[in-house]
Amino acid sequence: MNNYFKYLPVNKDFSSWGINVLNAGYGKINAEVDYPSQEHPSDHYFSWETGRILDEFQVVYISSGCGLFESASAGTVKIEAGSILFLFPYEWHRFKPVEGTGWEEYWIGFNGKLARRLLKKSFLSKENPILNVGFQEQIQSLYIEIIEQIKNEFTGYQPQVSGALLHLIGTIYSLNKQKSIRLNSKDNDLMKEAVQKIRNHIYSSVSITELSSEMNMGYSSFRKSFKQYTGLAPNQYLLQLKIDKAKLMLSTTKKTVKEITFELGFESASYFSKIFKTKTGVSPERFRKSTYTGN
Image (cartoon, rainbow, N blue to C red):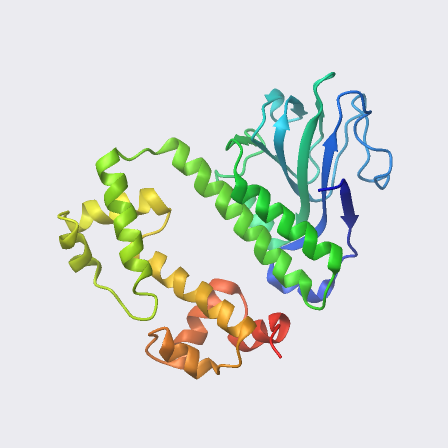
């Protein structure tokens, strides 16, 4: 992948989504190259001597190399390969690769009500803005997906890149939780089996009580272990699978909302539409209008 970045105009039409992607880029910084590139806009360029203050959030992934990060709230922190840096609006900061090593970086700038709401959660903190998730192909793939969509700027791309960004942040959160919570090998194998069983019920429903019995576990223990493994309670995990499948069907098929409702095992079209809007922020009809790629 070649070095690339793009800064986008603010589109007020998508403010209701709660999160707007403002810029994104990738850079492979060689050992002897000045950092950062002076080709960035003046409100994003900075030198190590002065640092900078942005009016947006950024999530930066250092996939290889190492360096230093410093901010007003966190002080100076060493950056290792596999580090995620969260940059906050109006927070002075600076970062750079260690001289003589260089690094590889991906970044996305964003803003919006949902982004600010996330700031209030312990997952995102000015005092602890760096997470180390190691090299993760899924993280890298999501950055590349967003960058490629921004390159093309096809009609309706903003909602898709915003959704992909939420997916990225959720994946980072999940990987961070997995580092802090480790199931024993037996429970880990059981939860893998349970996940597959639930996935097999995407077009129907499943009794979590019966499933926990199949796993020879009490309901409470099963639910707790499943949530540690996936980050979601079993019923919510199945619901999210159904919503993701519905999004794919809305984007790529001509099936009606009613057909999708009953194919995925929802009790009524009105209930499905209510749940879909709660989970995605838009109605099924509006989602289809902005994402449909079929003929």
